[in-house]
Length: 340
Image (cartoon, rainbow, N blue to C red; front, side, top):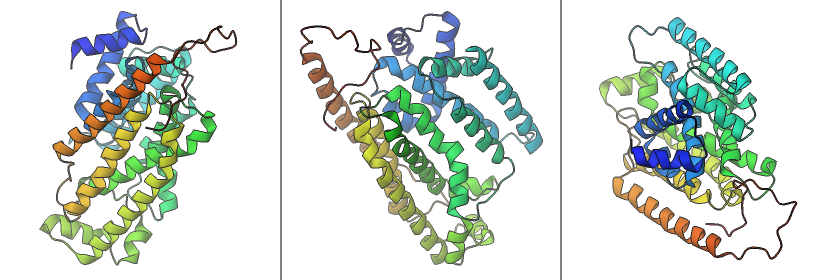
């Protein structure tokens, strides 16, 4: 972790309590270690907003790691007990805006600072608990019910931190769609890994339309083989995922201009995972598709250039002749700019 950059971010956010600074730093470490794409995109946010994003991601990463534990001793009952303990800590932290566990303390502080609806965290934990017992989804509607808590609410949690130039409720459906698009992308990329955990996230009816059952997926995985029926199902799931990206896209222009390069970068890079899957012949049952480093670098460079231009325009904007007494004093309030 870049210690000095972390300190600057915490200073910019006005986080002065030493224990809270340590809690946010822990979340930043989790983001840097596990979320290459998210961490890169977060670097494009104004410094004062980054700790909040690290807290939201750090908590989600922690809960997800409990569910997906590869510890041979972590049976379902044990993982359930760990999730229940996390739920208790979360409830107490949100209630008292505090927490004995660093990740919960940072999350509770972020929820308080940005007035994030607590039901989004409850819905997320409900989805995490379902992963302990649910191993497949009969239809896409069933999958969407799960993804509301596991993915859509992540977009809704982020929205107050990012800021909008429209009423927040207008942007919320697109933020939720983007969270779902990202998760669908993960589901396609990780078909093989999820199968090893006993889960199939591709809807059963979509697979059945192409003559695919779980046994065929296992056969392809175990024999390192391809099957035209599986390939057809994967292509259809890719098309479905791309349609959700299209639903999310109008929301980019609704964000605070200073947040747009961050989310656009995540949008483009995660969408590039779909391109990588296709380029690799949909071999997701055998290996994880990876976006080439040069592609990530090019997208990031373009985003940094756009962000620099936005910041320069923002700094050059003349101050009003007379201060408006009704104007909000909160520096996180969005400003109007053209789409980037």
